[in-house]
Image 1 (spheres, rainbow over the protein chains, first blue to last red):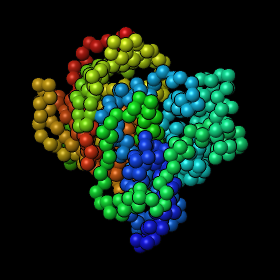
Image 2: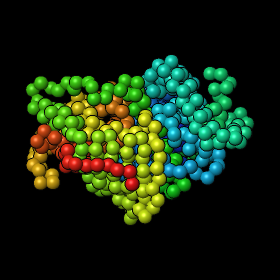
Image 3: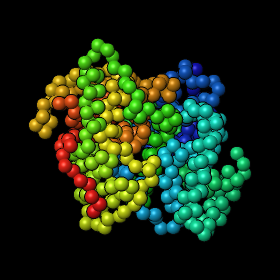
Image 4: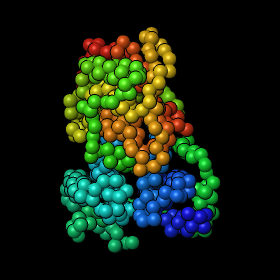
Length: 175
Length: 292
């Protein structure tokens, strides 16, 4: 890959990689850092970038970068405190709060599967490629994760009032 | 996927942070800076947060972190190794044999205490005691303290001068018994890596031998994950090793051993602050963990 090729590659994938990073960091500037780091790895390993599914390959690199990034960001926080923090009392009702609450009840793997599907708009086969597991595995885990999320949301909002609000904010409505 | 399946995902879609925070426009200063950095950066500095996350963001910060760190180990979840796999130690090395023996004895401890000092950029220290699967940890830092007690299926969290909150913890979210977790971490690390003897050091008045296991550097997702990454998260989390398989930098795990027992576990990720360093002591002392 020549320098020009790489610039083209960067332009074609920048928005997706930045979005992937932003969804897993606290701020836009953190997303900038993770994006730069991800493309930096791609630049160093430009001979290894697959011609097919290059975007998914970049997501895989981004996941490694994010793990490093997360390690540094969380370093000062003690494990036990972090564990306790994920189990605080439910926030006052608001749509986001309720979704986060429900998401927080899921395992990390389930959360990441759901977010890859819902936010990154990756299909089952794409998720399987990024995670290096079979599509069948992704499919069944995704199904269970979604069911668990629905149960958790329902448990917090038995009246279903939130459903209407969420649906009105979902993809295909205001996007 | 059916339309009904998508319905659940739509709720999440509305919470996508990118809906509120757009990427830098192509050609903008930020865009160019990122491209420039990508093509010139040879050593990869890892950003550290100078400021703690604001309270409102804290949950999300933790959540995002978990989503990243844990999912990084998602591959390992399908093939959990746990403590039942016999590690394969290089036949000529004595370090692995000693570490494996220490892991085995430590795992048999019915109770112990542990202490985690403030380390690296960390602002928190903690003291813990363990009896079987029950435990009690007092965490101190940032001018406050908090006590977490786990008895059976219930967790009790008591902030400093605050009211205790009791919560039932689902079986799949409970921390693994500490002694088993320590043993599994040592076994898996030995399985993965070269072991070298660093020297002897005194820990709490006991002369220990310090061993260092160095995990091979991973340059990408294609390189095999270390056995350590395949341990359950609820074991790795005791030692802040969640997501350990996803580091591209060199990782070392340090283990101090005396009298066939693990006395301390620590570690480093190259180019970053040290990981937790946890001392183990009072093995098999009469410790009872009670709900507050």
